[in-house]
Length: 175
Ligand code: 5GP
Ligand code: MG
Image (cartoon, rainbow, N blue to C red; front, top):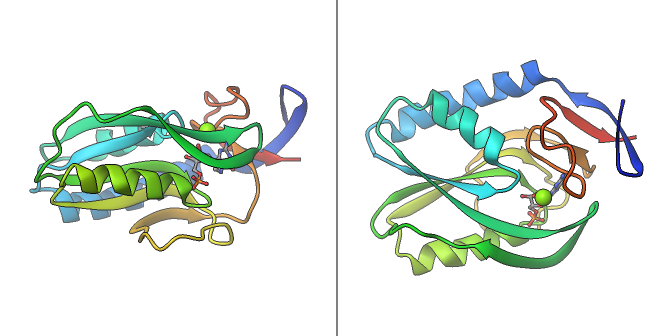
């Protein structure tokens, strides 16, 4: 059990399980993008740990970039996605692999979809470590889903509760 601010969280997904899922995704990415010199585009802050594990396992040439988006306050989405740090790299004509920690309502994806289309990327694919099928309400395809989870608030492995918990090496859910 861990306590972050006022809330208690219990162990939910072990580090072992997370690494197995990441190994599986990486195998597919190596086979689909190995010779395509992709740009891995991580969505900060939550995806930094996932992005690092994916990028370490990628065997071809690749570039790495990040954007920073924010929508959550505490344990609730505000539905209002802000671009806190935009693209600082030319992506025109590139193959982009978007790395998300978790896809929930999909509001963030819609925002990033617009950014990537404006940048005239050749193509982009969405990779997410966690996916909440019951919360996702958008049409943008999520190509690679690590693990589907019910509508619960999780922390750890990059995911925070009001800034805390990102350093936890496994995932916890609200008690
Ligand atoms: P969406 O825009 O799809 O609703 O939400 C995406 C973002 O909301 C994620 O990148 C993540 O930062 C945050 N988020 C969604 N669900 C959770 C959750 O269960 N726990 C935490 N800590 N953040 C979440
Ligand atoms: Mg967050």
